[in-house]
Image 1 (cartoon, rainbow, N blue to C red):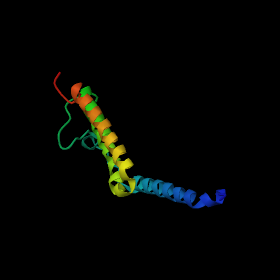
Image 2: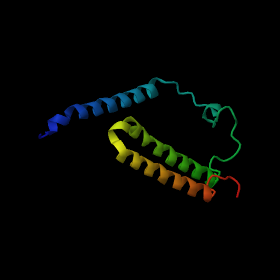
Image 3: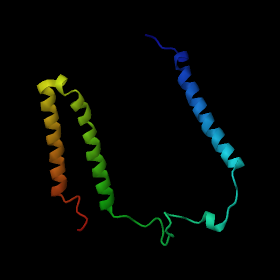
Image 4: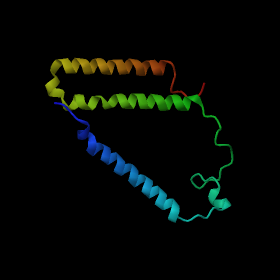
Length: 122
């Protein structure tokens, strides 16, 4: 099956229409919207609490480590859904592969616990 550039025309048109709509909407709202810039309006606002310090203050590396580990192990669970849907069709090979996958995840999880990656205090 040979595809020609004409076959991609609907996709290109969709992107052009979407980009045009976004551009049109942004220009329209900025041009007809109110332009009152007061000191209170331009001041930083965070959930009703007045800001007191610099927003660039450093976070503990433990925060980022826990976030990355959560994303890592959370995304790995997503791979179990297709396995559960096709459980009967995969047979014994699918079961062995999934158990090896889970064992590999558990090894990584126990390594993470052994290195005390989730403890906040040093």
